[in-house]
Length: 197
Picture: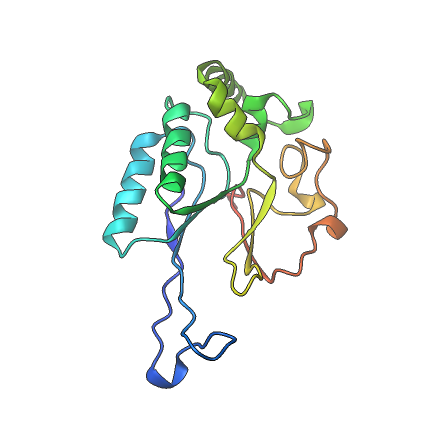
């Protein structure tokens, strides 16, 4: 599991207090917990959530894919994310290559090694219908960190461009990586994972 990253709450000095468009009230800051590559490991997810709460908590959770795969607790991890949402935390999640593999929607050039493929097969067999339904609707990209109705971040599992390679963005719907034109967004910042270079 990738270490969690907090977007620190803005602590303004008196002269820097952000003001709402109506000029009446301060604009509240929200804290986002950004996580990825949970890989069906509920113990690790619990530890990250516990640590994040101990560091001041969070208002939103952004999950950058690979919720399932490798570990033995895919249903528990998915239920934990659902429980966070039910408790009022905004949870924004995108699918990764392991979701694609577990759902059986990646093309053969996905490049998953034999152990990862075996884990995907095991996770597929272990998933409940509700968990499969949860994974099936995850988008490849999402926008998050809204302020005044405008997103501040694009979330994706891998690089949102054709150089990401097979098995990354776009394999579920288009069976090809996204092109540069599709990847361009008006959102200036991105949260990505998967690449280990």
